Length: 190
Image (tube, rainbow, N blue to C red; front, side, top):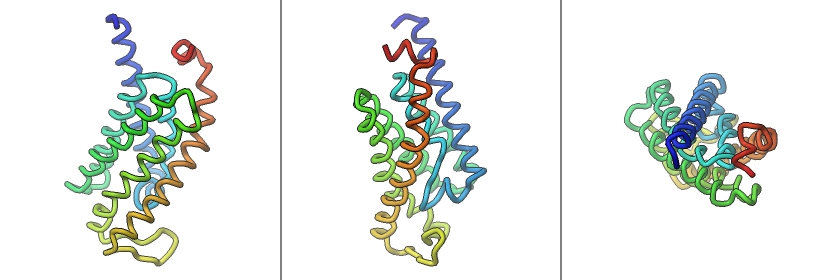
């Protein structure tokens, strides 16, 4: 890879990181309870499809997730427990993006990567953060799962998996189709 190619790759990864982080912070501040907590509907997750369009999407999304989760830590004042999200939430995004690159020839299978990674990883640590706040009531109900990690994890797998799938397939897939043949990505997809 020559210097110009490396610079272009780094610039593209940086732009993707900035877009992901900015959209995530916007979701956290505007959607609040629907972007953070036992049910998550983060519109910013739609941009993970960029990993299918460019190899720079993988580091860009991972770095963007680290930045967004650090900002989320500051916005939520979650303290040391918030570092769990910085580390493991970012690992989930990285694994999802790597899966997408690995299966990029099969879009339906590729899009499962972030859904599976987030559905299995995020609910493993999220109950610890939410319980520290004394909160783990299923949204829109009075059902309190506090004190039952297995139930919190199971609910998280279902809720986060469904939320992620809705965003990835409902918003990400149309975004992918719209961007696929643009001049920004056409050359990389030939």
